[in-house]
Amino acid sequence: MATVINNPSGGDNTSSGMGMIIGGIVLVLVVIIFFVYALPAIHNSGSKGTTVNIPDKVNVDVNGGGSGSGQ
Image (tube, rainbow, N blue to C red; front, side, top):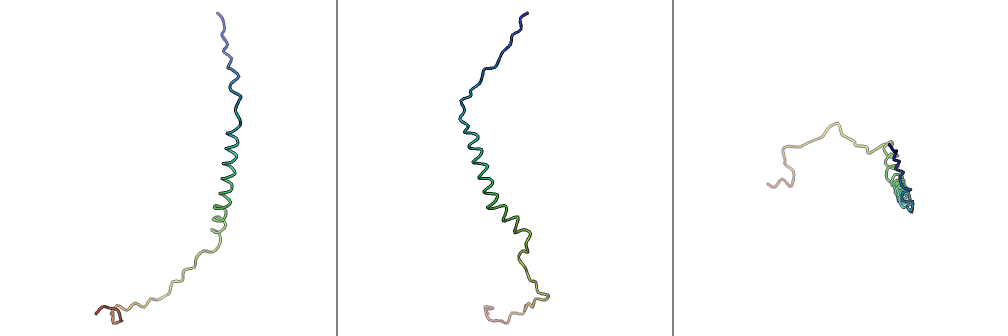
């Protein structure tokens, strides 16, 4: 019985490297977006945020009597 060996062809070696160029451009854009948006957000998350002062007592007059009551 004869042994048949199927050698694959050499393939298409005429690629221009366009995939590597596009991949490099995408990688550069991702790094730029990281430095513009993510890095400042990470830096500001550790600093003291907005301070909210809540008073101990709130004086609420429920009897009306003020101007603008409509009566």
